[in-house]
Structure formats: structure tokens, C-alpha cells
Length: 199
Image 1 (cartoon, helix red, strand yellow):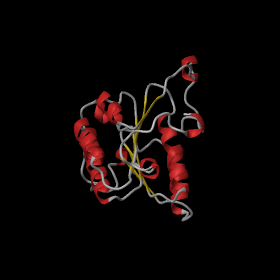
Image 2 (cartoon, rainbow, N blue to C red):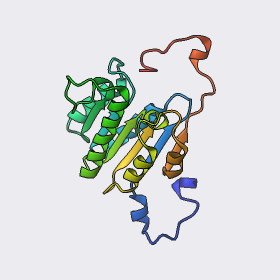
Image 3 (cartoon, rainbow, N blue to C red):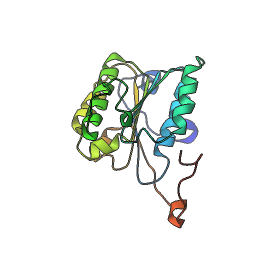
Image 4 (cartoon, helix red, strand yellow):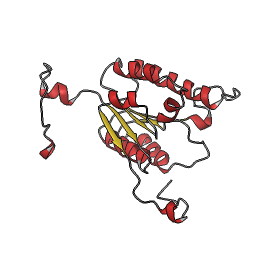
């Protein structure tokens, strides 16, 4: 893609503008570091465009302090760019009654149900489904259903899904797939994660 030009232009009846503004599904997968980091970098770009952003963190514990959460929440509240709604499965999701004890599998399904509701209502322009590949890989959420919902979503809503072991069907369906591959990591030499790098 020299100078951002596609190598081929399909005969699909769309104008260049229509093709350029087509909503995308992006997947960041693989065993290397940086899948979520790349998705949150994309969210920063979306914020500068004034897009409303919905972040849904699957799997990660509510006890984990995620630096991107603080940064994007502050930016979202600043009124200078897009809004940011941040939801964590580890906190039991913000819309679920606190006294209900959901299993991780039930919580993952409830998170997906909310994403479906938001997609139907066109609540956000960018959805970051962080670590969502895990519930798909484990069979907690049906991959075929996810693909059908994403294929039929209205408007121009972009969706990025992160996590290892993204199902092959999802990779085939997605518009952009990036596989992060570990070449070398400080943990290989016994070094634990550090502030500002891992969180």
C-alpha cells in the first residue's frame, strides 16, 4: 500500500468515499504484548475525531489498575473530544445489580448482551471489546452469533476485539487482523511487569 493507496479497487459499485467510510471490524490477537495497547491507541484517535467510545473489558479483574482507563476517562470527561464509557466485567458490569453474583461465564454473556443493545441503538462510534477473544475461544459466547450481529450492525460503528486465540471464523470475517508475535520479553529473563509498561 504505497502512500496509503490500495493495490486493487473492487468492482462493488461503491464510491471511493463510501468505501473509505465503511465500518470496520478489527482484531488484535496473538501471544505478543500490545494487543490492548494498540486498541486503546485507536481509541485515542477516535476521541480526537469526537467519536463516542465504548470500552468493554472482558476477563480482566476490576482490581487491575489500567492506565488507559484513567487517561481515556479523563479525556472523555474533558468535553474536548468524544465521550468515553468504560465498563469492566471484573466489577460486575455497571448496569448489573451489585447484589447478583454472576459467574465469569454469565458475566461475559451479559457483557455481550449489552454490546448488542448498544450496537442496535448506535450508542458508540467505536467499541473496544478488550479481551473478548477469550470468551469466544472458551465457548462462553457464540462466535457465529457475534459475526452475525457485527455483520448486521447499523450505521458506521467500528469494533475492535482483542485477546489471544481469536477464533478462525472471526479472523476470516474481520476487515483488519493484526497478530502480535513475541520475539523477546523481559519476563523471559525473570523480570516482572512494571508500572508504565504493563499498566
